[in-house]
Image 1 (cartoon, helix red, strand yellow):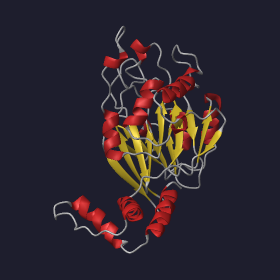
Image 2 (cartoon, one colour; image 1 turned 30 degrees about the vertical axis):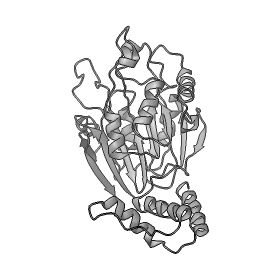
Image 3 (cartoon, one colour; image 1 turned 180 degrees about the horizontal axis):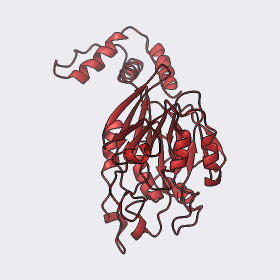
Image 4 (tube, helix red, strand yellow; image 1 turned 120 degrees about the vertical axis):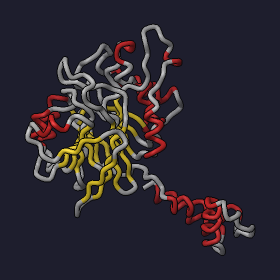
Length: 336
């Protein structure tokens, strides 16, 4: 079961076949497989394509060839470059996990990071595990997007209690290194039977764990509803996802799915505050609640403390009422 995500924006387009995601995150569409190829081929020029692995449902060479333009760059995990080059695609960058690349021109500036996940590869009976698989992180300004690729989270053997099953540590590492994320695409389908699929495909419970581990502020479920690959009912993944979010007391709107053919406005996604923003918030909050600072600054070695106190002293003299008004305005501006 697969899903296709599309975003539309005048900004640069990044394509994760068969998922297409724009770094400006303006709109997200979900389409079924019968519509997916036609929709992608109607796209304007694609600037950057990132590919998760070489399975046929994730790397469709005829579509890649048609998307490839003179200035289109393709990013692939290790071992996949030759496949594209032999198909006539010129600009291909092969990446190992944790590699980072900058893509810039007069229109945009994107940092792309190849990150781990838990899966496997192969396009025939003789090339299993001969190439790498990956998830991807895209960064543009203060916005960060995580594409989960095709992945499992925990390995549940037959008869094993899921609570004791080992989990993939990569997602917490990704969250620590690159999070929080404004938007993430996380797989939620193709998970039954668990003893067979758990190591390579997330179920909704696993997907919520990934959502939490990577510190995602907004996630969209993918990898369901297109190809019938496994035993669960085709519409079960989003139902189970909603149940899992409610079970954990999490906001269901923070991780949900976009209906096939529907569009969702995502232009006001939360943005990761800068250090200056956080210091300003701290100073305004302190001024609004306790008034002017009359205490000595922390010692020379307490650099974080010094920064906080310097920020507070910078607004010394601002009335508590004005500080409260500015604090509320600052919070609203960060919320978009």
